[in-house]
Amino acid sequence: MFPHRNIHKYTWTSPDGKTHSQIDHILIDRRWQSSVLDVRSFRGADCDTDHHLVIVNVRERLTVGKQAVQRFDRQIFNLRKLNEPEVREQYQIEITNRIAALENLNDDEDVDRTWENIKENIQTSVKESLGLQELKQNKPWLVEECLGFLDQRKQAKMQRIQNPSQSNVDNLFNVRCEVIRYFRNKKGISESYN
Image (cartoon, rainbow, N blue to C red; front, side, top):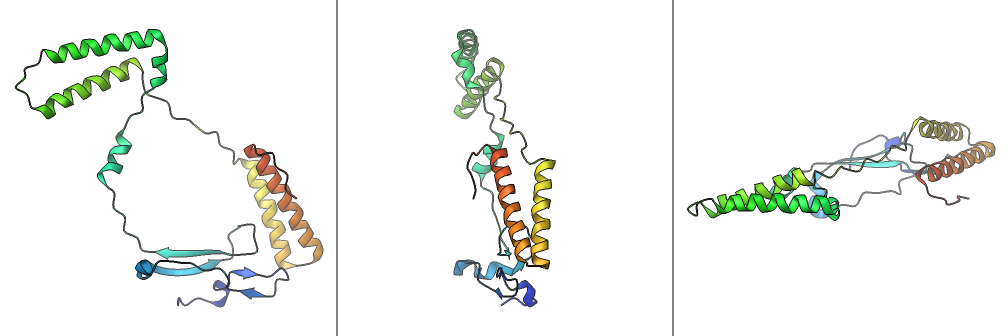
């Protein structure tokens, strides 16, 4: 369907390195069929498998709804501080004072404007009393040592592709096991891979 060289059409290479086949495909709904611009395989992607990465280029038009835009503007307050008695008392006093100040306003105002005043006062008092919740920062686990293991696996794979002898196949298998074991230990998963 898409004109490519044969080397970009096959998606699987047999362990002997001589047989190639196109066994991986992209499935798409007929409704989106006209959106597919191109499909091809990439041999250089290090996926740690005998299959090649298949990539599809799709024309997509996305719309952003109003709810999605509003969700990013939301502030997350630290509500756990309400469990502390001093903070809870301070918040109750502050919210009581702000609501009392709102009662003195005239009743001629629009209902929407009154609601906005109440909402702003509550948010201000929560922000002053409780503060904002800090976002959890994950510490990075992909460090230089990880990249070294990935390079070692890539070199073993290239050796196997260039010279598919049994020693290179065994070396690739051992390196793969070592890399998987390292990454599982690094992420905190204590499973053995054989």
